[in-house]
Image (cartoon, rainbow, N blue to C red; front, side, top):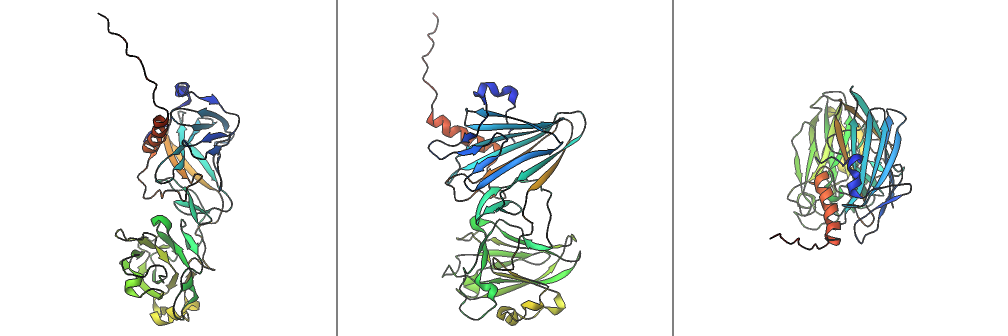
Length: 384
């Protein structure tokens, strides 16, 4: 993984001290702004990385012009430094803003960098994606989990709630009228607290009201400890027809949490999974499908979720999150954040994208190189 260029080498990149917002952009497109403290300012909100421990960080920033416009912000406290490089990468289809964050221990003893990610109040942040008004707008780093509070149950985030989207054609549980949708192929994930190693009957409800033909939206539904189900709602039940599938689920890893998910089938034409309802029952009390479909057994469920509807909730309370990063002497650890830039509909899913710091930087530099080609030079005459 490519390491951002340190300040000592920045002179060759035509940098200058920054005292105001710095623009990051691609040629011909609307810019984003980076504030003097490194905050990335987008039309939908502002995100910021802060070094909160060690305490008392001093912040410096430089503006980079070549090989692409970038803002380089360094926070340093004692032996620990947090170096952020923000720039625009013109990747398909509309580009993305990038923050490469490098935590480094320059001391001779082990240290810990505690980094806080400050978020807009209206952002719904899941495990990998942050949404603003239903749009995937922030992608979190892979390979490192933040410290955050977790509720007893809820959606792990990254999906869109669509109330009243489904149109069931017969009397049924009211939860069949709304859905959560994993736009762009994001899996719909829920977690439920149960006794470690416990068993539950999990029932998932579906109602397809967009596609008319089979093989349009195919999904893989899973519940921890049970065999997966391949779901094609139109083929199994029909358009506008509510249906359910059930799982004999077990907390297989004994962590006191039962994981449930609906993901797109790799062969599906429409890769946006949907889910209407979840019921979690103690196995001896699990009813037949008919009363579940009718809605008469919902009050008896241990957990009943109107997915995307009134009683749904996020697994994580709103607010900022923190990354605690232990660092050995001389160790560096890089975190990659992607943000939805002006004009973009969504940010790439970090769990599936192949983009990495090296390829993002190359894409950002290449577009400027193509716009501003190297000046022509006159060959040096050869000596006789």
